[in-house]
Image (tube, rainbow over all chains, first blue to last red; front, side, top):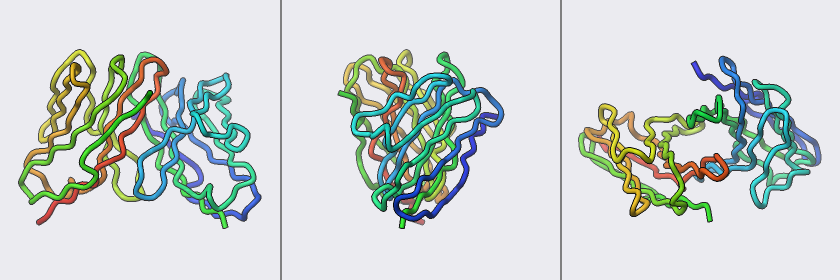
Length: 116
Length: 112
């Protein structure tokens, strides 16, 4: 149980375009989803916390107008990288937590974004 | 502020020996400390976690210890095997925001 999927697994896009990444909890309802960014050989940097039905809480330094997060249902959160540029190229990973009473986060497989 | 420091950044041990990775955290209110293993290009996998009401937890070859007074916690892997080679991340949950902050990671290599 506790499977989280992401789509797409990798994407290449041209500079200036927008890219949407989906994160789904397949066998549980996720009250909270988290979006992380990971550069090569570096740690996971939390970008934002997303609660179903409410606005995402962004970490300091993360542009909310550039990284749009939507958590419309208990099983789906989306991250849209708007007007992508080469410096946005990274590995984006989501995680999901079933409820406020549980600590465990389950991670998706990640999406590798390359902006040309 | 919210900070988790992890050492060492790289660690190489002989197969069969033990490996120890150490972390410190800054928020004394933190109450949950998971450890993740990440293989190249893959998702982080939870390998063990500990809550602040216990000082030690063990699962087969893996153990975690927590010193709340010093705000230290450590991962111990005994009888290391080649498949233990990966990047390991410690993390701490900051109770004020319910978010988990990760350490910088330790690249563990097991020498045959």
